[in-house]
Length: 556
Image 1 (cartoon, one colour):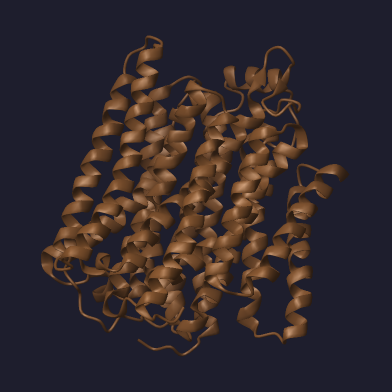
Image 2: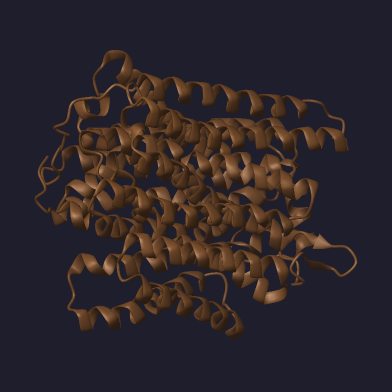
């Protein structure tokens, strides 16, 4: 595989990273709208994430299983470039399907919601194929030692998509007007706000997917790139993942069946649903540790899973994607849910409605953009002095972009700008302390994530709100660190290890529904304890993976 740095190829590759971010973050606005429009509970609304991120798992697992059966790496035969093209075409099909499944839908038609989930699943299935190819492709476009910096750069483009996605979708669905909660509810009831705008949005997105596919297919500057390593079978790993899939499908399938009736759920049914969600979550955790333990006794048949840094990294990707998505996806309900006695929301702030959520969700996802822009600074090889200056300036330039994008519909108050500026200052301090070390970066930002969630849980008002919003800043730099550390020292198993890591994006499909059901059973604010648990594992991973790699003598 050529390591020649190809800037034009990297620029072309950035387009797919933008798409992932735009659609994924848009879900955070679409989720609370679906809850209102289709008359569903918080758990059901989080099934948007289950369908979306579950597709990543199913897509990557399908490629691995089929490759195992034919004993040949399908993606490598296609080449990374063609893999991205095929993924874009699949996503276009999903986007176009959104039109017929929502045609004529009216408020309260829950059955239509499940058809929408199928369309989301197909879109994300294409994303899974794109991401399985695009991440190693990005690393392969230059020196492997600077691969994490290129991932930060593409991640920064991805995060620009996450920043503008919620604003654009909010404008598309609700327009530029600011409706009161009662007015908005009445408009939805009267079908004055319908899914027609969503249909048009996804038709447009589908066309863009086709344009991007054509751009990749006909681009002569974009190398095909294939891995020069042979496919490595891992029958034990494959069988374990298939068993895990059956457990997850069984748990969610039973939960879906309990929603089939029209009668209201009893307290006992709600507890059963919550228990089954934790069974699915525990199955993922248990599978990872079983693989780690078994591979240490007999590595044969485990493939890349015989490396503890990868197995631990799989759970790290699972929890990282899970916490990143669940904070944003449940944020809308946190700001919407009123407390009857006070008329304020769970944080003691004025209750917001669906049309007012986009800017705060954009601010959360914008936090990821800020961190990734900072992480990408190293790609341009600045001098030490200039780099220090950029570490301070770039975050606030990115913040300015966020404010500018949101000015289309909403103007942040001086207090809101000040609160988030303080959060950014803390993040800048973290970057200076980390000194570009993936392990130190994970330790510092995992700790900041825990701290932010605990402050959000035990405080109220803007302090609590911006503590939760700071979760985006904490998550911003984690993906390239985890990915780089997890595949370090894997050698011929690197490609297979990358596929296993992409499968674990499943965390974005499991953890948000778990939090959604916790919110249904307890309270929306207390449900954020699951975010604390995710950050706690990431802190453990940072310490543990350092010990593992040091023992192996791997340079990271």
